[in-house]
Length: 152
Image (cartoon, rainbow, N blue to C red; front, side, top):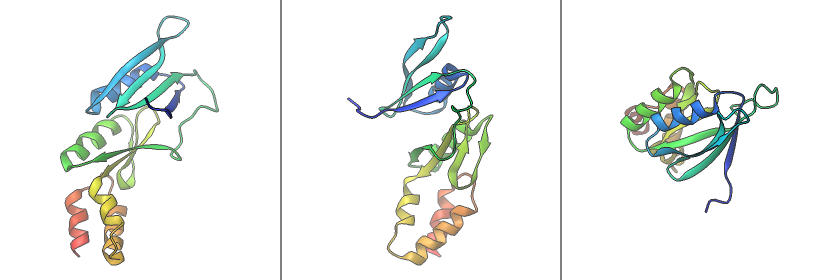
């Protein structure tokens, strides 16, 4: 059993957010829901690749706002997966540089190809520098462009 669980506090549309994630992210599903006082869904849990997230709807509250200081990072293995996740999760939200996005509920995500982390940590620091510069010019990460930068 997972001992530490990310808890997300949405001001509104918590159930809609869970449904959206389950419709866009492969291997994501709603695990449970929590009824609010009026009987409508006020919270619940969902899983992405076996990682559980719990969320609840607070109603308007100035202290419960998402920030880019915290983001959910999804490691992608291929360009098709990056395209699906980046384009899908940013729909109605905001595409950001370097594979980041803010979804329509205000939650920040990073769609990161596995190869990016490998290239950034390459012992050849010039190669890693070229990859970093290429990444800084991207919104959605393009694997072929990273590989071209790494090759020099």
